[in-house]
Image (cartoon, rainbow, N blue to C red):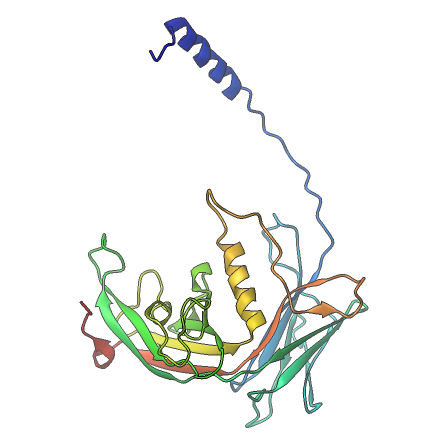
Length: 301
């Protein structure tokens, strides 16, 4: 067969069998590097308390929750030298600023400085609160989640128009019955209402894939409460989310080598331990709609 005799094929089979039978488990002792400060800080202009979460990094294969970074001093200052202190009241790594009655954090166009003092190190970061367009409407269409299912659900679509005559970056978030959709596929960012500069969409309606990116895999159900938020972000935040999504969803035959996602949190001592994570400030527009007859549209052909 194909130029081989039977004896050649038998010898080849024995060789392959011998190779496959020599598999022994090998335990690799991976050294754990030094822990780093991890910053999860996103401040908005919405009413209510604002939180900056600080934790410490753990080993790559450690599946436990990262430990909180306790005992830090955390402040956020604006261009007018107004300083707000964030306090870890519950000692769980969540540093919170609580507004007074009628007070909100942040004004569009202002820059904000985050300052953290932790374990003898000082970390800083700067972000700017940019404008954000209003969400005009949120509607639903009855569809199957996929062609192989018999049941139907309701696919949501929001409508918003990019702000004209400037380059804008957005982060889109969605909620089902008050719970945020936070799967890896739900990291959705937009450049002028489109993808990463794929077309000139300045001042136009957000493109359709962005408008329908707010759905869970199984779609929404009748009487669900659906909330959509559009947040203004900086270019640095836009590319941070793109790289974060790439690393989280990195896999398969053509996966790229793992890489650290850049941070905008800097140690003032260039020789000191580095931090990871991101600090950002956002203006937010939102709309909440219930899946009911008045908000359901005919299916598009």
